[in-house]
Image (cartoon, rainbow, N blue to C red):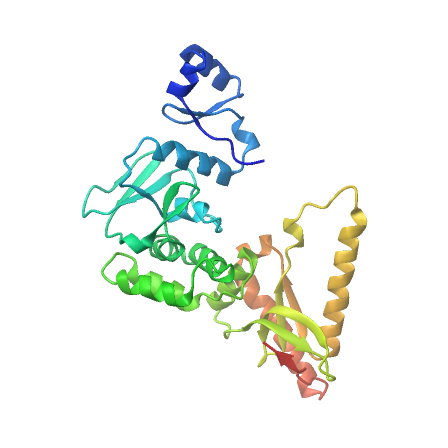
Amino acid sequence: MGTPQPISRRDALATGLSDSDLRRLCRHGLWHRVRTGHYLSAPAETLSAVDRHRALIRATITATTDAAVVSHVSALVGHDLPTWRIRLDRAHLTRARRNGARVGRLLVVHAGQLAADEVVAVAGIRYTTAARTILDIARTEGFEQAVAAGDAALHRGATTATQLREQLHRARARPGYRQAAQVLTFLDGRSSGVGESRLRVAMAAAGLPAPEVKARILSPDNSFVARVDCLFPELGVAADFDPRPEIDPDPGHPEAAERAAFAAELRDDRLRALGWIPARWTWDELDDPAEAARRITTAAEVAARLTRHGRWVPAPRLR
């Protein structure tokens, strides 16, 4: 089921509803107001934050001029890219002019340069391209949030490293340029999810060496053993983000969760047998960046002890 389309007050009145009807529908939670003069015919709690934002975008563009382009986090939503921990309560538009930027309760209007090749139509709405969007997010949002969005854009093929470098070159005189440059340097399209991107950021924040991303571990006879999110060859540690706590177990098939847990344990046992010490993080644990340092350090100490006793031999691997 798609996101419900916002209904304007004018269209609602044309169907025979009155303003009193609209107020009553909203008061009883059957409808909710997206912005002044625009409603959704669904309870707010039945929609995700992203779906509510999609409705806000559509309601907003109907009340603005065609010169405005949906941008920043609203463009992330339009391109189906992660909006992890980025505010979704206000729509963002960009107008190609020097001034006129403003911040309102439900709308942020940006003013600045906007080239024709930085605009793309998606489902009838004009958005900044994925490359321009990632650059804007890298300039204006937190490092971790920007990395999550940028990694996803590269991984899904929404943009390329070359396109991002071109956008960075164009933004050299804009606020946030240095921060954006740091984000683009850190991006890695091999990270396939927000959790994996956060894991990489946490490790970098802890001062750990840069890992090999999505490394393939092979056995001595060159058969495939596992693919790990982050491999530290010099430490003998194989680090992974464990997404299972993010997934609601199916109460009708509890054996599926048990099989997943057993497969993970078997995989870790095979890694240990080959000399790699596994380390895992869950979603909630990534909120404590220091935990990355503690777990990697502990795993590295185990590997070092095995090395001193002549029991650790690095296993073959392919990136």
